[in-house]
Image (cartoon, rainbow, N blue to C red):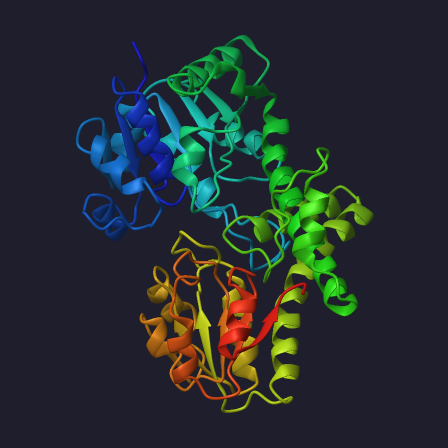
Length: 448
């Protein structure tokens, strides 16, 4: 008999992952629970709490059949044999390790709830991104419940926002780490069966728990490093007359490197990259690996420098003053096809522009409400869903997110309503620069 599944945490990990698991395991009951009543209500409505292409269709297909969203954490733990932990593990902003270490208070509270409410043996699966050897702490907490056996596995997610459903449906790999014991191997086999309902067995990789925990941090750190590397080259391209897109195209044709994550831009954002790299920095420092810690810290510092450099270039192009100039920010989400604004480069750029007393108007097709929250503390910021209205009387358009609709806009119409000389700074290199210049725009790009 197949075991039922509960995921504690109804965020970007829990909701999409459990929806796809339910879709491919119709004979299993899959429950997603969270203490946030508003979030659970949204998952049970027609207006899901997160935007992700394809997510709405999957949820509606299985919700109420074998996928359920609830705030009843105690009942869900009792009813299910496989417990995923997908709670938030943000960067700790206080005390020891502040600004680098993971804040594990929500994770620990969840572990204690599992121990408190468990009514039988459970397979407990770390889905949140956690520091290496955190599973040992989970085991220590769960072992206080002497009646039942708990097997703790690590099953990190490798989802990219904007393509999360595709990543779940057709993953490059599924990673499962477990103890090398008889019960541990049996628990790993149970989880393998869950994914094998649709993932080819050769793509389901198994390791020990510690390797699985570290692999998630390592993967994100190396992806972030590629973005910082190409952005470091972008500045040199601008100084020498090289074109970063051409450099990246040739470099990416090397089979040893490949073309992915070699796109110059405003820097990485989202909930994972900065947090995971900083976590890796903290771990290296903890184990006395200070040169390694400095190396990974450089990835974050280069990313922050890129946003400062964007504002500096805009400043220089606009006669060395941005005071009282209207800047239209096209795109606030950290990437296209998501409404997520966590660690978005646009927020940092807006803060730097506001410090220069620029007047900002922000437009974004999916992230405008999050932008209102993120920029609530800034003066002289307007929010406009219509990009044409956002551009009215603007001195410059700053493209911060490569939404597919932006190249399709009527840029002649935009030019007509802007103050002259009208500038477009395309930080994503997603617009036709020659066409813009033919219209009469001054243009700036990253790495060109």
